[in-house]
Amino acid sequence: MNAALETLYKRRSIRQYTGQPVSEELMTELLKAAMAAPSACNSQPWEFVAVTEPAAMERLREALRYGRYNAPAAIAVCANPALALNSCARLFWQQDCSAALQNILIAATSLGLGSVWIGVYPVQYLIDAVRVALELPEEVTPLGVGYIGYPAEEKPPRTQFDERRVHWQTYRKTES
Amino acid sequence: MSAILEAIFRRRSIRKYEEKPVPKDLLLQLLQAAMAGPSAHNGRPWEFVVITDEATMAKLRSHLKYGKHNAPAAIAVCYNPAIASSPSSKRWWVQDCAAALENMLIAAPGLGLGAVWIGIYPKASSVKLVRRILGLPPEVTPFGLVYTGFPAEEKPPRTQFEESRVHWEHF
Image (cartoon, rainbow over all chains, first blue to last red; front, side, top):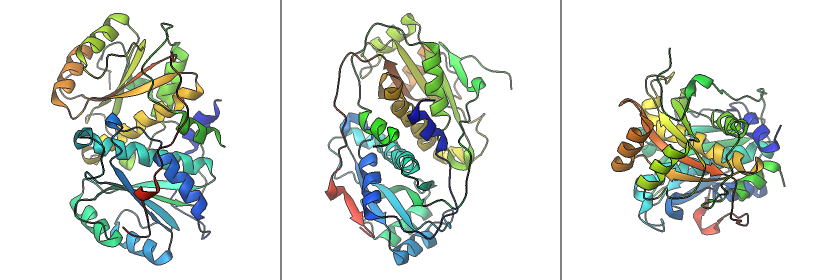
């Protein structure tokens, strides 16, 4: 199988991690992958908060009701309209930031790291809690957080390909 | 460098394509990549319409202001709340569909394909157009299109990494 596809299948949501910290070098690799993502009209509306200190991780975990996993590191993908290079970001920032976050998860897999996507936007109380935990200014919106660390659980590679979800040429309702 | 990092950096928006059609097998591999994407609570709220028919491609090209490129094929990523296996998809479907779409873009270079993301949702006029051209029922929302084909332009791999966009531990 194609090596890239293999990694896409290996990316599974990992919720148990070993205590081993993630080096700044690997975190930087992940950030490079994030900023290789496409964005509408190349507006790059994103900013990132990389968290590796235990106390900072603890604050983040506290903020995220659905993120109580023991990952030693995280990257919060945020949108900052003031940094966007053009107005396309107004409509598409959520998608741009999602592509960047997905790139982080995939890159992590290939570096031997586990990861899981913790959704934040559009749930207001999560946005507020993350804003406090990471000291984000009002104009910066957290889209989501990628938890990162060395996996302490194993999951087999998979795709959830389902041919009933695929229509050829035009849409036809499938029997359910 | 790992194959996937290479693919991530090689993923560039390709806007010029060879006339050659894309074999079905490669389109299926893109769809397998798409459906390996994560989704909130594993809701998988997605459906896909694959277009290789030149008449339909021509309609998309002539109506979509930002989709004039000569790709021989396209895959529309759509949201269908009725098939989502979790009610949380209502909140997260945009992000779920974006991850699926990004997976296809990353899978493309390894298959020898070029690709470009054509944004549709939430632009009301584009949503309406694509819905009409692809015959989508009202409950199905077109999220975005991947145009794909064999590339007729070359772009160097890159990241747009910028240190100033990174904060450590807190903002």
